[in-house]
Image 1 (cartoon, one colour):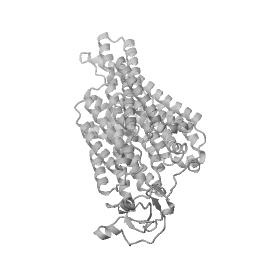
Image 2 (tube, helix red, strand yellow):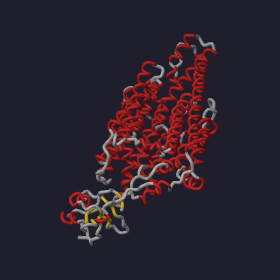
Image 3 (cartoon, helix red, strand yellow):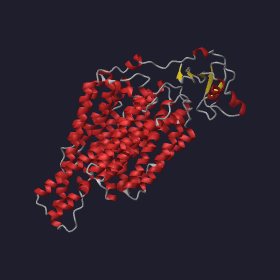
Image 4 (cartoon, rainbow, N blue to C red):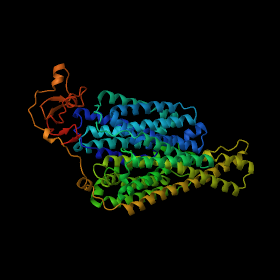
Length: 611
């Protein structure tokens, strides 16, 4: 994703996760550190690419279509496979899959940094997306599993603040690397924090037990979603090649249709169709899609304007996004209280309207002028509108469904927000068409010689980076370069106005479909899981003062749990031995209680809920 803000569903996924006893208190800070590192690595790779696109295009002489794939390949795999990545963690171990994702990101980033051509880089970006689909959902699962609900608010706040800081700094840092060395260095920079993530997870993060009731991974659904998204995106990008576009769009449509049919019939769907019976849930997700389509599309074409037309350096281009990131990172954390006072619906309508006005105002600046009087205002307005929208989106997703469906609903919303890969495909095609049309008109009006005009029109796929032929007289080169910049500005303005219109339509949909939302209604109306093993609780006296097995073999324990059937004392899942869990598996005594001071929770291993 190219927008400098993570999807709103990330925090919702953590909040909506089932209650858990959590891991030992000393281990929680390491889980928090590992999840911050992991989420930040994925987020860095998604945002650094934004300011690196013009430099990548210059390196390879790449076409707009190739740049669209460089930007989209990561997001296609991330959007299609995030839910499947979470299911893999549930079945094969969240820490293991989390580490695989972090290691995969490191390797794919190195592969991208040495890519000899655009095709290699696109493949490396796709590998990054696959790795991100393993890392991101399991990062959130580890965070939610380490903290009981009473402590998640503070953990989410720390995690959100840290990732917001990364989002603010990443574009500027990426731009500095592009200017100081190369965009290749910006790619390679991801490797150290990714490897640090693997090391912290391996040495310090507890390995939660694999869910015994985890549903099977929907492999067929994941494959159909991936093929469908690749087909649709490829068809849009190849719109100028009619046969290729038709074949790709047709294959994508068939795969997505098969995906919908499969999800309706399978016992363990990746995207449960029943969720979309809620009018409010559909409205929230349509708003999410259009909001992120608009902002991501505008932020895809903006760096080309700043670098190729306005003459910004890559560092200055990254810094240009800083006001947006800071506003979203700081204000969106405080909008929740405002939503409690006035309701979320006004914010879900007013926020996108302000965002649309901000995007439309990017069409106002011409060529030249300081950043403070040209692009700063649009950045501030867009950031303010987004900050008003994101927190209410999270609340609305959770309120639109019952508590049992809250986790998967958050994951679906997360995936839809990451579906902004369509923005890069659509807005890239629109920008190219508008620029090409404007260039032909301006060339005709300026009575440019036919041979020069043919060269410039044929090179339009490089956008404003078009090279003026060397045989053109020096006195004419400057005027032709200005003509190319003016033509690109025409295309840019049309593109950002389209983006603004998409967000405005999202606001209208929100006004029509989302009513007043009570954030507590889901908990009152939903059916929470219940425990059927309360009769097994006998509250016996502890049989020992420490973990019985650890005392016998000389190991130290991390956290003690008391079996409420027989009084066995074992160590928790934060320890290397997991004796409490092993006792359940061997004896089938379902319920344990914490023996740590200040903790009185009870946990049923069979039902996997707090009791």
